[in-house]
Image 1 (tube, helix red, strand yellow):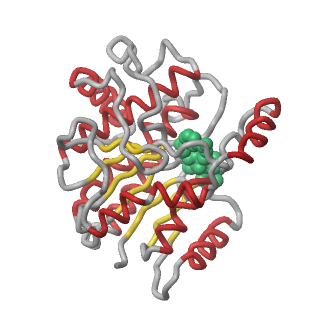
Image 2 (image 1 turned 120 degrees about the vertical axis):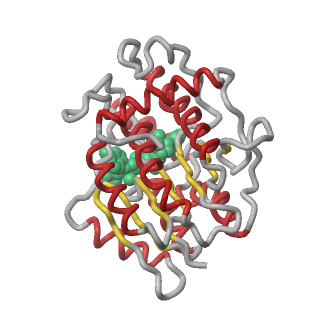
Length: 303
Ligand SMILES: NC(=O)c1ccc[n+]([C@@H]2O[C@H](COP(=O)([O-])OP(=O)(O)OC[C@H]3O[C@@H](n4cnc5c(N)ncnc54)[C@H](OP(=O)(O)O)[C@@H]3O)[C@@H](O)[C@H]2O)c1
């Protein structure tokens, strides 16, 4: 099997370990992430070392996911280049732990640090790649979109009607719940509209990654200390790739929260998780509309 996997946020942490694990299992990797000097060469030689057979085709595509314009350009490039060959897995891990408040992007005016990175950029990427995912040829159980964030562990965001883009009630907790809740809601609607594609929102558990690098020193040191007891990125990646490898063989190995078609929630040991109590058709409609508005402002249409 030689499928194609796009891994966003593959330059570090969980995303880098997932990219390596998928390369080891025979996938060609389209590694997407922020560029810096020497990074492309380092990442591609790392992925080549992860691959266990000759003939793997890995590439690096620079993209700063704080900018929806960059996400759009990158996703459209990948979608066009893989339109016929297809994409078998899309993994979204771009993330950052900060205690920064609402930080609008210069281009779009959306909150960049939490909402663009953890939500809007992920939906934009998945949306642009839907046609290429439908062309997947290597997955007996269908292609997989995997968003690694907070599936099953975040709270609901109650003000989705009155403040649908979290512009007036911003706090660190509200932003974390908002990003997780909207990942559930929007991916669930995408699952409904695209029954041939499997959508998974996962929580990775507590993982010894670079997570926390942007935190102030008084928080970063305790995080680094506690990470001594955390799961390794390799172990986490082994759990996170299970639905992808299982779909390659036939069955995703997860069940949806209500047993019918829809979004899969996955916990850190690759076991099925649950949705929040706030998950409803009304909330899905509202989150879908808000996402449509945000993407429209950047020249994108939700399919
Ligand atoms: N680690 C944990 O314990 C934990 C727990 C729960 C949830 N999570 C979630 O899991 C996901 C992965 O976290 P992690 O632990 O792997 O964190 P990490 O080690 O800090 O890695 C984050 C990745 O996201 C990339 N990224 C950050 N900003 C970006 C941007 N503007 N554009 C493109 N890529 C960007 C980073 O790129 P650079 O290399 O350029 O920095 C890096 O590749 C995150 O969403 C995080 O919230 C992690």
